[in-house]
Structure formats: structure tokens, C-alpha cells
Length: 158
Image 1 (cartoon, rainbow, N blue to C red):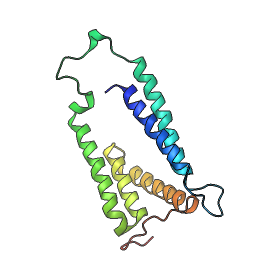
Image 2 (cartoon, rainbow, N blue to C red):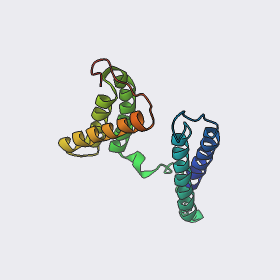
Image 3 (cartoon, rainbow, N blue to C red):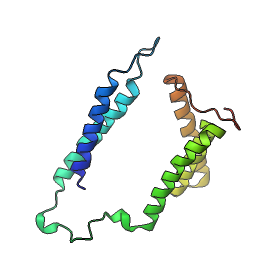
Image 4 (cartoon, rainbow, N blue to C red):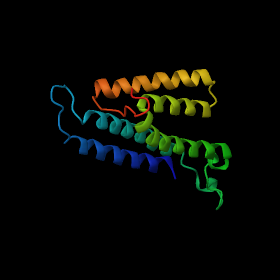
């Protein structure tokens, strides 16, 4: 699929979320409401979609360059490592859903982010430091700024 098509889909979805989130209620006692976070993410999607549309229109293959039937797959689909990383990321998302209620957000996010870093070839001590730092920053952003309760966990209640 051409990048322009993917970009158009992102623009449409981002625009729909932006329009839908305008009706979200305000949070009492705060300068921003429930619509801020979805709107920011949706506008980022619209921006990314616009970039993809521009790239897709620039890179349109000439009719003579069209690949023969059966060779239309992207390069990454021919790599076993890419498929492993894709499946590992999906497994990590499922792992978060299962682990966070039990061990808490901070522990689950630290472990899973460190595992992603290890998949990308980062040294174990850097992966652990990045995992911990990312978990703390995300936790603070959601619990302090956005006042969104994150799972505290049963085993490790922090």
C-alpha cells in the first residue's frame, strides 16, 4: 500500500478523534479537560499522515517499475528477525495487560521497556536504566499531571 493511502487514513482518523474529543467534559479545578490528551495525539496523527501523504506522492513508482506479481511484499517481511520483533512487541503488550494489575504499573513498565531495549540490542544496564526512567516519567505524567490512576499492583503495591 502506498504511503499516501496510509497517510490519508491517519488524517481521517486523527480528524475524527479531534472532532469527537471536543465534546469531552472539563476537569473541575484544572485549566485543561479530558479532551487535551486525545486531541494532542490526534493532531500528531494528522501531522504524521500529512508527511506520509507527501512522501507517498513523491515516491510514486513509474508504471515500468511496478513489481511483478508475487513480489509485492515489503522488504521487512522477508526478514525472520523483523517478524520475531513484531511478535515480541505484541507479546509485550499482552504481557503489560496481564502483569500491570498484578505487579503494578511501575514494575511492569520498567520490565517491559527494558525488554524492548534488549530486543533492539541495547546493553542490559542501559536497558534497565531507560526502562526505569521511562516508567517513572510516564507514571508522573499520568498520575500527577493528568490525574489518571495507574495500576498499583497486588504483589508490589507502588
